[in-house]
Length: 307
Ligand SMILES: Nc1nc2c(ncn2[C@@H]2O[C@H](COP(=O)(O)OP(=O)(O)OP(=O)(O)O)[C@@H](O)[C@H]2O)c(=O)[nH]1
Ligand SMILES: [K+]
Ligand SMILES: [Mg+2]
Image 1 (spheres, protein in one colour):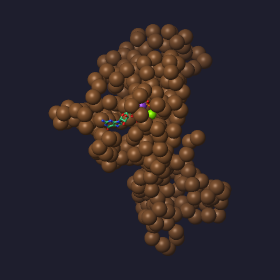
Image 2 (tube, protein in one colour):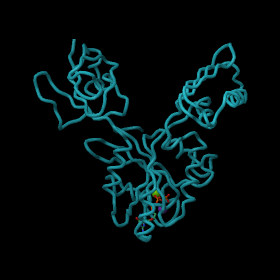
Image 3 (cartoon, rainbow, N blue to C red):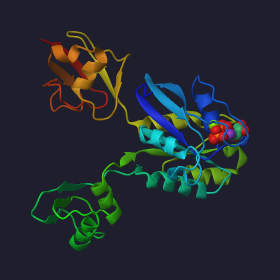
Image 4 (cartoon, rainbow, N blue to C red):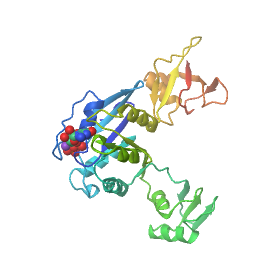
């Protein structure tokens, strides 16, 4: 069940330390042992951090071919798709190949790690052929190639506008749809087993954090990074004539609207809503009068006025 303010999935090969990590970071105990496939089902735990409840999911270890249904891989990957951030846990004593194998597994089921959705406008039409335009110079795709790709997918009428210099694979992602774009933290565990030089090299890799669950090393830093990758939006409420309540933030996912804030305060508040006053970076003026569809930004203050 999805609960809390955000969800983080622990993905990795067997025995990299996923369960050890869950037991350390949450009040849930997940069995850890030196043999592979100790965990056979999804074990949820909760990390409480900066007033947010972050659901952490310990999952069975996945192996090569997981996406094709080997082991419990398919279920694990289905859970990963629903999370807000993936922690890819890796054994620092093993080679880089584990990382590329896992990336390939996730890639093959349409999960895109640390990538933005390609900025391409694509609209299938009933007729009129293919209209192709771009606002930037394209170095990887051409009108001809785009047409070929579309024909491959049996699309003969569509409007295509490249707003970014995308690759053919990125264009295919847009046509196929159903892709999820997800932040991923590569966490190298068991650094107690490798040299300082190795630790230093891994720590400098992009999107990477080095830890040791065994020796409780660098776990605070990992939490800080996780918080950054979750990019949650904290909203403070204020009553008329009073100061904002900075002790109790409402925590929402990025892109949340005033309506989301209302629902979080009370089930029926949105139906009694007249307008809201918002202070912060989401508005031009502070305060600004806004409606239910207004999008909130991190650390905005809101005062809701009822009918
Ligand atoms: N040296 C060292 N051993 C660790 C560390 N973290 C975990 N381990 C050991 O690694 C082994 C596997 O840990 P688990 O937590 O069971 O690993 P898992 O990824 O959950 O494994 P599966 O559930 O089988 O996929 C255990 O013997 C742990 O004690 C660490 O930081 N350093
Ligand atoms: K294990
Ligand atoms: Mg486990």
